[in-house]
Length: 141
Length: 132
Image (tube, rainbow over all chains, first blue to last red):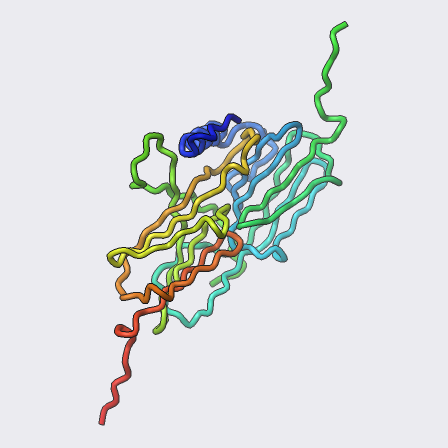
């Protein structure tokens, strides 16, 4: 991904366009029937590995469960409001409840090295590609 | 509220009247919860990916404007392969019907949720009137 450091607005617009281009791409193939389920997920390639970025604002880390087996990753948890309910309400637009979503990625993953980070309401899953699954450069003799 | 509710995807709403720029980067409208007590108005906004030092809130002519800027340089070197949502800065304005004590506005951002507390100005707090 190219970044125009001199013009952050332009860089963001370009990146937004790139994100649109891959909207609902067939990268996950027919393996994931849960498309459109909560929480929304974006998947990126970074070098030889993959990163899934999930928007999950307002979820307590303790209420978030991540499981991985083979190439299947399961995200489940709950999002609960933490308001004192004595106030009178003007607007309620945020949604609360439980979620359970499973994705299976079309690459072999090194599940032992899968890493998750939750910061500023964003869950980042670092999905390392298994060594044996990485493309090998073939020398031409 | 039914706690066992299964969460549904809330499509991100794009801001329609962001100020004009030469290259139009899209802004999003953060979902909001607003509540009121006798003392204050509380505005809660979801802005995933926005760090604490990238939020601004100001009031001008009784209009509260909150902006959260996303540090998208974190995405450098990320090549999208499959996406379900777009990213961008957040911006939203509300016209306030109460007079607010501007000096006492406080904001707190945790896990992508911004809580802005707007204490009402003394003059507009309801006064108890005793009947003789």
